[in-house]
Image (cartoon, rainbow, N blue to C red; front, side, top):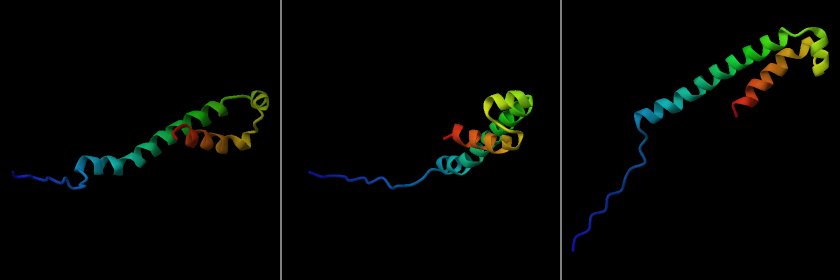
Amino acid sequence: MAYLNVTAGNYETLGNRAARLVAPIVTHIKQRRLYRETFNGLSALTDRELDDLGLNRSELHSVSLESARNALR
């Protein structure tokens, strides 16, 4: 009786490679868009409304950046 062993190589397809290379770019674009939306939304609030949230205008950049980073994890 004859046997045939076929071992599939661990090859990465061109589509998988392209997707792996493009994924960080897409993530960065999504994070940047979310950052801008958050920053613009918070910037539109009055100082009193920001105070109610416990924020100061000087914190808007860091809060928006942290929000965008955490949202896409």
